[in-house]
Length: 276
Length: 334
Ligand SMILES: Nc1ncnc2c1ncn2[C@@H]1O[C@H](COP(=O)(O)OP(=O)(O)OP(=O)(O)O)[C@@H](O)[C@H]1O
Ligand SMILES: [Mg+2]
Image (cartoon, rainbow over all chains, first blue to last red; front, top):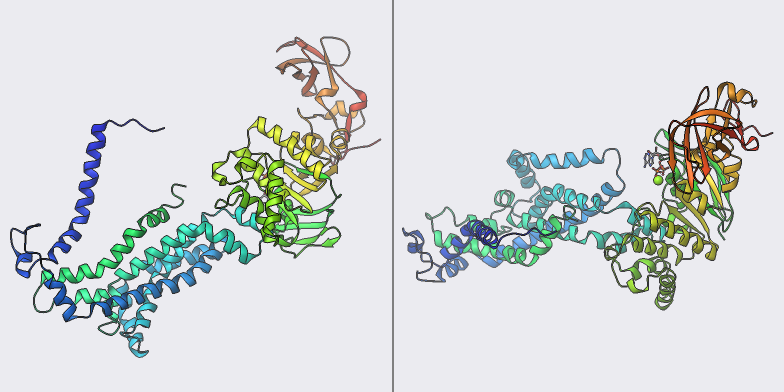
């Protein structure tokens, strides 16, 4: 039964929702605007909102000073590679935990999650030394490895919860219908888990793309992804707000576009099971 | 063909034994119902036959060959689940045809068979719908369609009607038995509803705490129960059990008499008692009567007797219908 809501209430709550949405979005908007200002205007008080001299010079400077495309390529490799490897490991792991659990499955899951509670900085020195010894510093392989391991617990957990939602009966029905394990996986399990798998994939790409701690500490130039690219504008030669904004805008643009196109999938996946 | 034989089948989950050595021979084409109280192991026994659980001990033969160790997919049986377990992402057509697709049947052939099954089950208008767009009864039919289309050696049903309302249940009960007779395929049907068991079965297996108490036709179970458990489980209202002095007169530690074999009258012969509750069903009357030195007895009379709470009544048992049981609860046959 739909509740009757007065038009006035709809108006008020719609306005409130837009206000909150705008407040959350405002810093991003401000950053994008600042990236089109001159350095002087970016600093000025009171700040100008829309009526300033629009310029693209910051973008030109940024591209000149550092190779955006190179960093973006590194980001794609690191985010994509670590996600792909994590999924390859996590899907079979989550399947077996959800459908053939052993006595230790619960403990294993908890232990995996507990590794995420430890502050990464606690293992920075040992990992740094290991990476130096094995020549993994500032390599794409090294970054893929560390991000993959870092996100694996979350990926396994997410997939596990999605798979858990699939009734065992349906898999057994497929078995009774004469499906072998492989066909049961292809024709029944995977199609039913697609929303979960897709949203896990998307979330993991976003997490890996935005990850700054390990990428900043373990890479400097060769393998540096966009996080390092942004960071390079934040300290040297004083503060250049406009240029920093331009760099940041460039760095988040791809993930923003990806998020925009996949938002329906993401929301559906993240609330999967909760609504049913 | 679909003869199913169990030989000493035992099943334990860890140290907890759920089935204690079951022996059973189910003839080809017969309709066998497993009945028993909740938790007695009906589902477990069915899943052992299906191959969804591994036996701990013993052998299961289908048409004479041992299938222990054979995967569920290769046993040639089909199953209807209590939850229906339809594939939510496939249409009704896809659901019914899935087994044939797995068996590598050609597409035109699949379509022909699916449509024939759908026609039998009145599902033709729904072939292109998804399961979530169907009512409970229609989903149930799809699950049955999925089972019959493969022409299996036997159907396994696990309480398939328990999610339906009473009227639909009676109708589906009839449809399932009719269909089974028509196809002449062995069926094993699990239920805890003894009315379903009595009306549908050719033969009934009564299970209790993981043991087979009796295997026989509905009337055998009703007329000649092997033990106290079967006597008490089959029949509604329950059989009256009488012990102590009164039973000794009949030469047994315990005797049993069904409510319908106790004749109630205002006066005359028999045990005298007082009506404590009278249930009027129109066609029948159930009288719960307190008899001194015996206890509470239930009598069932056809029609209306005009007796109510507090009335005195005489109960006379039909001597030919008295069941006698020994100290271990086994029936004494004379
Ligand atoms: N996977 C399992 N692990 C451990 N014990 C189990 C398992 N499955 C069933 N059991 C136990 O086996 C016993 C029989 O269970 P089963 O499901 O066969 O009963 P049932 O006769 O089908 O009952 P119901 O009428 O309630 O469906 C129960 O005591 C149950 O707790
Ligand atoms: Mg059961």
